[in-house]
Image (cartoon, rainbow, N blue to C red; front, side, top):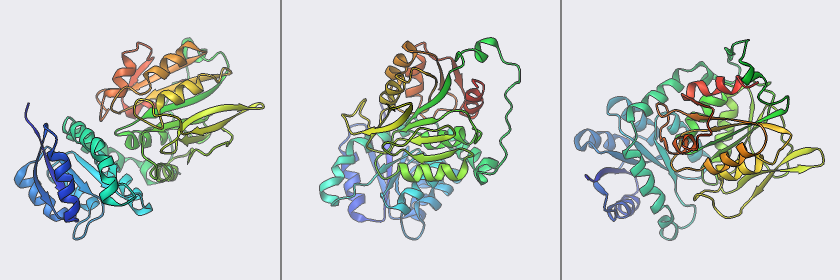
Length: 365
C-alpha cells in the first residue's frame, strides 16, 4: 500500500521538526515537506500534491483560516488543524471546521517538550482517516453551510415541511410519553450538528442531549457558536442542572454526560469515570444512562465519526421502552464509522442524509 503523503504547516520550526518526527516514525506515512505559513503552504500543495495537510491555526503572513479557504477552493486537500485551547484558538478552530477542515488536534497546554507526545497517536489516527476522506464532500459541506440562511443568525425562519398526515406507526410510536432527543457524533460532527440543530424549532417539545467527541476547552466554544445560530438554546452541560425542553446540552470535553432522577425531575450528571471506546465523553455512556428514563420516549441520532461508539448504547435503548433511531447516511458522513456500526445492529429506524435528519426528528413529534 502506498504511504500517505503529508505536508506539515507551522510557523514554529520546533513544531515542524517535532511533528515531522512523529509522523515520520509511522510506517504508513511519508512527510514530503513543510511550510512556514499559509502562503508558503499553498505553493507547496500545488507543487507537491500531498494527500493530507496538517496546519497550525495561528500563523503570520497568512493564517490557517485564510489558507484553508484558499486550499479548499484552489486545490482541495484534506486538512487536519492543530489548535491551541485559548478562546481565540477554539473559536478559530470551529471557523476552520465550517470552512472544510477535516478535523483538528488540540495542542497540549503544558510544556511542549513534555506534553506533545500525548497527541502523537491522535494525530496519526486523524491523518490516516483524513487520507480516506472524500475532499469534495468536505468542500461541498463547507459551501452548504456558507450558503445556508440559517448560518446568518438565530432569527432565520425555519420551514417545517413535515407532512400533516403521518403514518399511524409514527404518530403512536411513543404511546403519548414525553420525548428526549439524544445525539452522538465525532469526526465531522461540528458541521453535522450545525446542520441538524439549526433545523429544529425553538419550541421543540423535548430536551436534547449531545455527545461530540472533543477534548476539554473546545466544547464551550462549540456550544456558544451553535447557540448563536440556532432557534433552540444550546449550552455546555453543567452538573446538577435541570433538563428542560427546547435546550440542547453538550457534554463538556473530558466528562461523560449522564442523567439522574432528582425528585420528579431529571438533571444533568457529569462524571470522569473510565474512557469508553477510547472516549470521554462517550455516546454509549449517554445512551445507556438515558435508557433509564422510563417515562420518556427516546429519539437517538448517530452521525459521522470514526469507530463504533453509540452502538452498544443503542442496543440498551431498544431493550427498554419506546425509542426511534436515526443514522446519518454514507453519502453525507465525513467518516462512516459510527453510523455504519449503528446500522449493522439492525436497530436503526431510518438512514438519512444530514440535511434531512432534523426533518426526520420533527416527524416523530
